[in-house]
Amino acid sequence: MEMQETQGSDSRDISNQEFWENLSDMFSLTREMINEMAEEKGIDVESLKEDTNEKIKVDSADVQDHPVSRAADLYFESSHQWLHNNRDRFSEVLSEYEQLINLNINRQGSADSILIIKDLIDIISWYHTMIPVKSKRAVMSSMDEFWDEDDFQNDMNGTAKVVIKCIERSTFAWNGILTQFPDQEEEAMKNLSNLEWLKTNITKYFPNAEKFIRPGFDENISQ
Image (cartoon, one colour):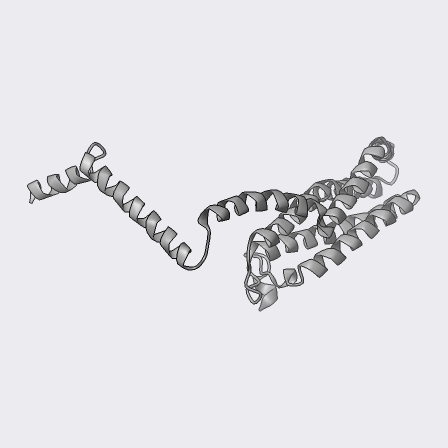
């Protein structure tokens, strides 16, 4: 018994020349079978390799030019510019509330306003960078894979649903900005409009996104 195990081990040893020659023959035979099957079906294997490389390049351009990607970029640019332009303004307002707290003037109201403003800015800051990344991933996924129309549980719909949630939370934050900074109405409305345009495109190109069930989040809702 011991001798048989030793011989079996030797036959698969990395230095065993016969093993590697047999393995090489197996690979060659498999490759020949694939080529024969492809030839019978009129498929040019080499052209498939070229088409795959070309497809990656074309998809990259298509992703950037897709209406969903353009809408996501539009929102990112407008919100990013707003955050940059108002950075000092936020600091000044927060400092004013802190001074009121130190002077014991409307301490609770001022403390609440500080928390609200920080939360609103954090929400907009976080999601405005996530939106274009997730939007383009959803577009890329829709181009790279062939999904079953009846199967909603796929990366395309899952990623698109994440974008929808990002839009909803960002919309909430911008409505909060309207309340906290009435003088920012024009900029807030512009960004809300851009978010609405993005959601319109997401709904158009990913109509089944809302049907995707996120593990740990949506199970109870679907029941």
